[in-house]
Image 1: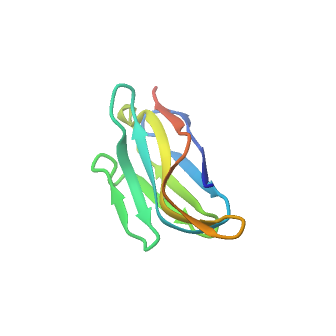
Image 2: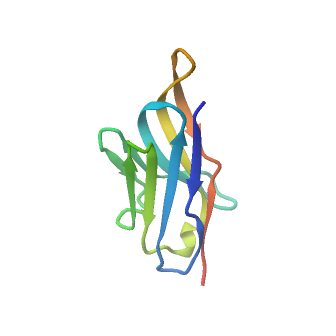
Image 3: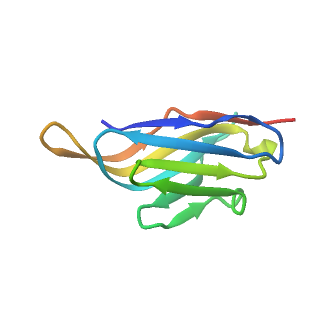
Length: 125
């Protein structure tokens, strides 16, 4: 079906920057919404940012002004550029795609919700 492959996580100092990437593989026709979620140790998974195919963005209050989400529809890839990283941003970041239309052998399919495997972001001095 649809596979989301994430990259770009790592260790960074407070105030530093990272750029996460997530590429959707398969014969993709359309992805309605792509986004990022994160989960810190001992906490619930939370929304970070989403971006629709129409260009509408949604950011968590905690990351507004620091994170920027973008997507390249030709590559079926979503990015998350993170500036001014703080220890509170430390978490596993998950890529998400909602409303994926993709082709099978002879017909097309619709995936409501797809997730990546997650990539670790650690902010520490």
